[in-house]
Image 1 (cartoon, rainbow, N blue to C red):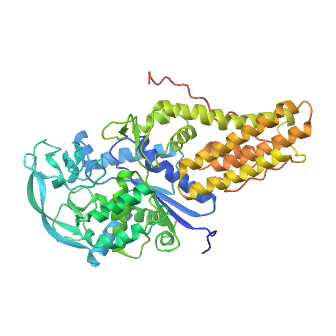
Image 2: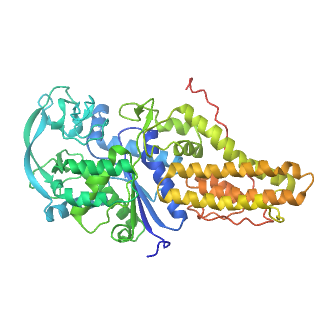
Image 3: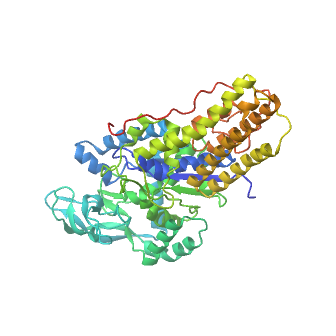
Length: 552
């Protein structure tokens, strides 16, 4: 396969727990970057499937169900439906957004378990697990809370510390307490299957050190964790709400640990997608073809699972592609605190959907993506980005060019005259901009890519200010025609560059300019606008946001 040949590209997006409303951190950390990247790869001709779903198993769901006094199924269904509505409102272009509650996912997870067992990477072991004597039940990881032994954070859970990102076992916690009774739990013996994660230290380290182009914070964190040593991990839990074991030698009430089962969704979702299409083996082209690529989008708290644990599981299974890249974002913070639905930091995503239009919100988040460091985002910054950048720069440029074409040439793309140096520079600039944006997007540098596209819009505005068509219209019709023809060509190229970020408004611009836009979005090329084409109706692309944030 040559470098220019179409590729099979799997875009895999972290699965949110269906136990609470989404916030902007979900959008900035995983879902919007994935959608931007998938749309771009489709536009250059690659064969992309983008998959994810709601994680409906595990203790986060049962904790919420206990709080509400309802069944876990009810909690999962409620929030899954809310997630689907949010993704639709945000114009996220899924090939499949599903759940971990499907028959296909159960089948794939159980088959994965059996393959690991057959390959010798799972073994039964009696161990001590926290037990709440007052409640009379074993405590899954998230039902144990305490102080992180690594960073001293006082609200760490028994599975992970949200402050430092370390994965934990409940017994690691200092001063552990039961989430139910708020009393110290005791240790009792129980039997589980354990995963020989320790056997993958050497192959993981070799693989991680050979990665090129990965974000340093992802690669360095993963390498550091592996070098610190990997311990065998429990692969099952005492929990009914989950994927039951396909073997019965441990007795009833055992499920595959949700952390390992959930990442298997990246394998089960493409299989579900293929079966829905009536081509049940089609998924293999993305998972078993060595030339296929896979990109995992997530927040930095999920780096261990996607850069260490999931690759180790794939190695243990055999015959499946390892990740091409794990472009994890850092945290989106609000007032310095990480957005968190469980801790009530940051407004829910629904509030932003009620107050901002889709492309405006997508733009505000995209220009602030926390790719290399945590990014603090305020509502004032969202409003500023939309009003001062999107409306004043891009929206104003489109409106100027289309309005002048309507005023001076009855809304018909004019025939240009001879091109001067400034015209040539502007036309060359649109091609350079599109090439630069493509290079940045290929490297998953999404924030710099949108900045470069907006720079292209600024350059076209500068060209208009230099050529002053509103003045030449009175004295030189040919010069005016040439200026507006060049400006329209540049606007079209900028709309292509912005299409992965602003799919709705970019489509409106291109179609108004006479460009035939495929259902999936425009192809990544400089549009060739034809003189004589009548422009379609195109009102203001974006409205200035006027909102009293103090009152809100």
